[in-house]
Length: 276
Image (cartoon, rainbow, N blue to C red; front, side, top):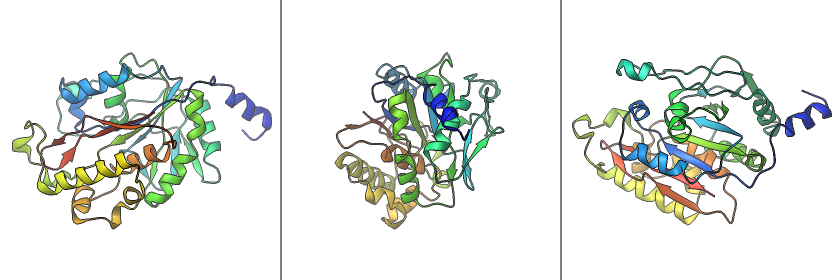
């Protein structure tokens, strides 16, 4: 797609729209895909407030790669990238179409960063387990953008900013992960206890929320330099970095709000963010 005509064709694939919201969704356990709980209700309530998108671009914690890739197939497969769950979860299919046109436009917008058009991945559970509650009929095309594990928070924040033009083409951009995500310390005995977190998780959640609501994003971008509570909350960055993509897309006059803002099993949070 090197010619000017090709680029015009791609830009014309999506009609101009009002500026779409941007989301960060705390996806939690894959079981949220098939269970009824307060967080699933939160996703469904969110869906009632969203304009109908032309397509979705999802940045999921579960596609953590060397280099940046974007799914470019016509029909992405539903990936069951987990183990030890009931067969009912493995039976779930989310047959949303892909969008090669959006993949190519995303690649162009991210220049000079090198982006590989990927024909192999699909939709991992970070994407489909939450998007299925927003659009249960799978009637909105979905592509995924991978997270380059060799890059810093600042790099990801600045890369996200290049995607802002998609918001006025009806593209809903969704980051999917968990802000507090320490699986090694999960308290499985108290998994069903409402809003339960260890002291460090409570501290990390409160600090992150204050930074979010104050619009003070730099400490969040530089998460590796923050307190011990942050280090326990973010022992590895893959579930946290989708939040940085969401924040990179916030306009100066836009409002940021939180929902599903609860701790879970001591060392996880379901906190989700809407920007519009």
